[in-house]
Length: 102
Image (tube, rainbow, N blue to C red):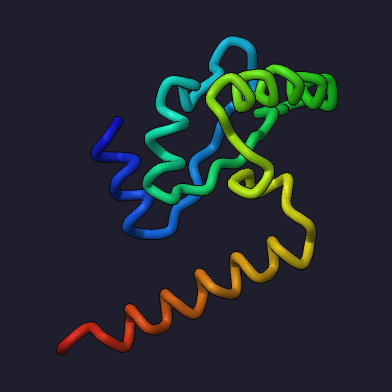
């Protein structure tokens, strides 16, 4: 997991906490490592039907167990904060593309 989390940190990738009770990955034991690396997490219900939306509470419990704070949970941010996050990511990607030597 360390290589995947490190790659996410290096590339500004958000990692999902899958709230389906049969999945619950990213495992809570890796949350602190991801947070220490500055990786934002997002809790998602993996809902393939509307009843699957009820699984969110499993993801929230796992996130709390792993020490996830509101500030590091993408879908707990306000709309303005989410917009700023993606704008920053987009700007960083543009800078990265310009720095590639041909």
